[in-house]
Amino acid sequence: MQAAHASSLSALADPPARMVDGAAMDYLLIEAVNALRVSSAVASARARKIERDMLEAGLVPPPPAKQNPRDSASSTTGKISRPADDDEGVKSRLEAIGMHVGGNFAERLCRDRPLFSDSLDVIKFVCKDLWVSCWDKQVDNLRTNHRGVYVLQDNAFKPIARISSWEGRQEALKRAKLYVALPAGIIRGALSRIGSQGTVVPEITTLPQCTFQIKLLKST
Image 1 (spheres, rainbow, N blue to C red):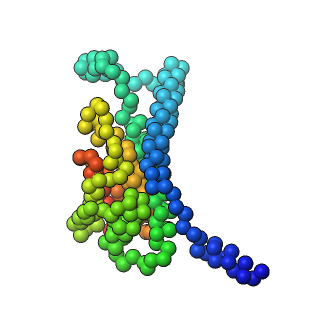
Image 2: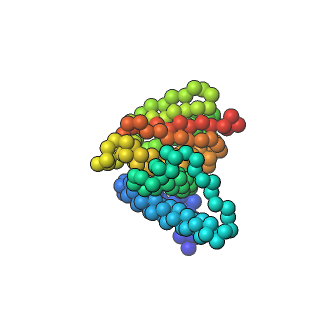
Image 3: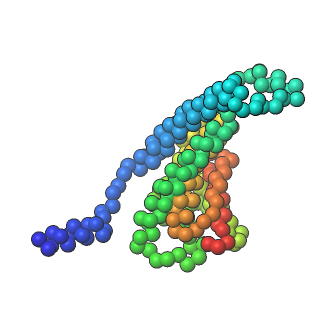
């Protein structure tokens, strides 16, 4: 009886590793981006309807009239595009999800390793351990100015490796920027969970290459 009890306690203290298919994260990201874009569009449409209703009821003052005739003409011609802030809202929500995922990843990966000695040691952990766990490879290039700014470059970043668009290169780059919001959140969440606060800014100039600029606060 005692042996069985000790075995169950050991299983709780050192749970077995759980494996998932390597493509699961790719499918999750695709569905998450699509679902959040639809959700954001619905929320924006609802907010605009409420604003119109309040204007018609006289509860809020009308917006000032446009003085530039070119602006008024352009507003009635051409196709109607989705507001730019819709995509920004999607990026913010994806980054928030990524922060939660990254924090949990960091806890698992740091369980059996010693404390980090400095900020460079933290960044090396991100470039090696975190990158391999999330995207199956290490970072291709790491640069720093030795003042808290680090640039991580992945020449074939997995989340955007298969992105393309029949509308051309610029449209493909625009779509790719949505798909790196979640990885940026994962990196930021991992850094936050191990005590390093800072900003993570992704940048894409050529697919499938992606760079992340990490700027750590001086106190970390």
